[in-house]
Length: 192
Image (cartoon, rainbow, N blue to C red; front, side, top):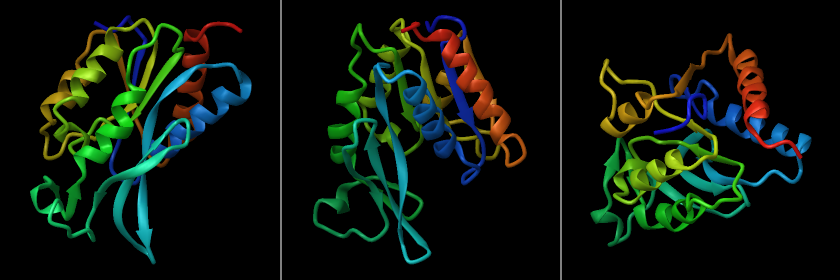
């Protein structure tokens, strides 16, 4: 499906720095190539005091919206799926993530942080990810590490894509992996 070497996946335990790595690679690529056309999003923790109370979606063009919250309680949220203590706002997620995953011929790179349990509650999300994989553009995405030896089916399908390259992040290899991914993407992106 994906061209060999064009699907780069970052995995590792929660809190190891997957989102930080992806945002730093994105910032470095944009700094070295300001005309690069990148589409996608990343997720960011929402904290109150020292406690994590949710996550928000941040598109690469700067729009934000809620993904999940442990503090929201509206009549709508009673029907939202839960992941741990978080209620997942699928409508908000889809309103931000799906438009930036629309395949366009002039897109040089797609970034998806992350393809995980919360995001996969959207029935439209994984088909959009598959369309990105079918495009000719590289994909940089983060995926959760299998829990208790079991992978989420959509994540397993992505991890097992022909041509997918998986980078397992740890506290000791973060800088080396970031440099490796940055250099690999530089080789895949159009020269401008």
